[in-house]
Length: 337
Image (cartoon, rainbow, N blue to C red; front, side, top):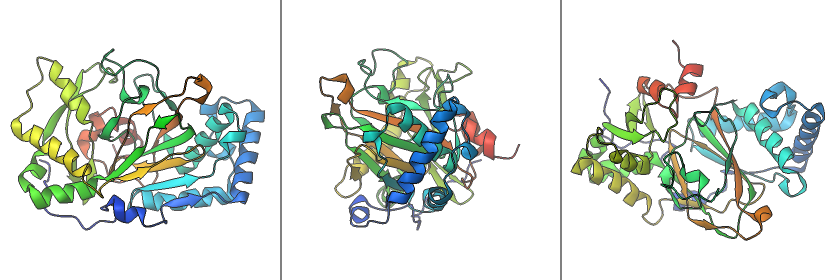
């Protein structure tokens, strides 16, 4: 039986966006020497002509930058839960070079994990011109829609910005731990509801073909509070006749979660610019974005690259994560059999 949490947590991962915005310790500016080291590593990797997914940490030597990246792991797990890296010289790199650079950075932080049924390790986050709902496999990151706050897969997600687009597309980052604290303060009964099972649409991404997966939004496990939330997929699962109807309490709990995130001061808004890389925990952070509009020229359209990573200092994962498409691979990599 799962242990339920019903008290406020004193945790460095519990923070408010307005207070975080007043601080600067979550921004890491790449020093010139770090940029030179990165460019040398990218050039070496490109000259070898090896498939990007075959490049490991040893193929991407980062003596100084690698130590800085390792230091960030303590913030991603056990700290505030996110870091913003700034200064990748993407304007003078080709897209291929940028892909190599992001992959190399990821290799120094952890192990990339698959993001879909095909096992894709590096996703392009951009509008492919099809609305969510037009196809049952379309996912929000493939559209220009606003994306409600949610979690991705693996311990950490990495978003590297190549191009911003014309308007919109602001990234929102929120502490799911602080949201939980607010729910406990206001409606402790709904905090319990969110630790019970919800049915979530798998969007055709499970290897076993299951249309849905069943899991709680919050899990308290071995002294850590973890979140796994895709509210839109919880609602879209209701299209299946064999899925239990959401109760009034479940709907109320989900809407309270999102209402709290939308209150002034809760979210940290980020304008990701070319060369910015956002790294964030998928266990303590929910993230989303505002709707965006692309310019007419395809070469200028909004484009981000995304990695999901298993990190070496990752938290103990609850047993039910082994049967989720978001965390199954990380569970196999890190949890004892």
